[in-house]
Image (cartoon, rainbow, N blue to C red):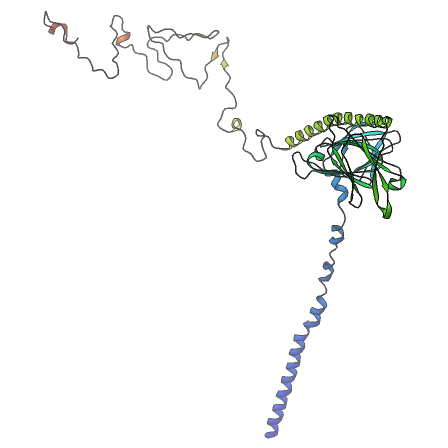
Amino acid sequence: MACRKIALTMLISASVMVLGTDARAQVDAPGPARLAQAPAPSPPATSPAQPAASQPAAPSAPQTADPVGSVATLQGGASATRNNATSALQLRDPVYKNDVLQTNADGTLGITFDDETTFTLKPNTRLAVDEFVYQEGGASNAAVFNVVRGTAAFVAAEIAHTGNMRIDTPTSSLGIRGTTGLVEVPEGGAAGGEVSIKLYPDADGRVGRIEVFGRDGAQLGILSRGATGFAIRPGADGRFSAAPLQISREQAERDRAFVRQTFAARTVGRQIIQQRRTLQQQQRNQLRPQPNQQRPGQLPGREQRPGLPQQRPELRTVPGGQPLPSPTARPPLQQQPGARPTPQLPGAQPTPPQQPGAAPPGGRPNVPTLQQRPGARPTLQRQPGALPSLPRAPAAQRQPGKKNQSR
């Protein structure tokens, strides 16, 4: 008996161990599957959209930006490099920020910017528009131009008076404080020779100021008198210095003639800028909804609402040419005997008199009243608020010799 109990106990224990092993196997079985699936979301983490987002979108910006200037004068050939593409310039062509303007060997180019700052480029001159921000009355107006090579005359305007205007050269940086000047950069820039900077009076005779700085930011000098200039020369340790220029009379006359061309270009360019602004304003006004313009989903106008007449009803006519009265027109008032006739308008048909006893349209027959009977005295009209009169006694009841009390 004891042996049977022992055997039964061992059998039960073995069964429990087998069941526990199967349960652990089932619990652990999904583990490798989860580990195998965990790396599955990792491919999206590589984010294939990142290379697309890192692609530069700068080439499209100048196409949507507004122009900052226009070609005012042009003789010979000139071109503009924009988005790594070069195209020939024509009169009145727009000029954009980051444009590089180049004149040919026979070309002279005049450009007027939105604040009326004007440049005139001689042949074989290159000018880059590095920065231009202008808003009328704005406090952050700024402009940066770079004369890479050649000869350029300039007439400063609003930005130089109220903002920050700068002209860069290969060897110096010029702070323009409202004036007229001329910059000459030899072929090859700093390695080609001296850069000349000259100051001349404005068209009204005023003289501004040009502050000359080196490329390292050190101030080299200030020009504040007409027909004066500096020659930027290389110095020790790669630095540059500003030496005063000796301008001869013949050279000053040539420079002034070139500056007068810039004054003339500004006059023409001012008109072009104004016309372009007017056109832009008209285009903006066309895009705005007009006050009387029906918008999508808007209720129709009053003349289109149901229940209101679209137009006046036309007069119907009968054979013979006489018009019939409108169904909505009121019947004419009957004229009382003894009343003044109603004046008739020129060309109007007279109203036919109504026959005695005839009924007006939609009314009772016209029965003559006491006032309308022949030989009857008209009844006096009582004034508003007056006492009513006593009835008059018959003639048979009157006493001789006494006045009628009813009067």
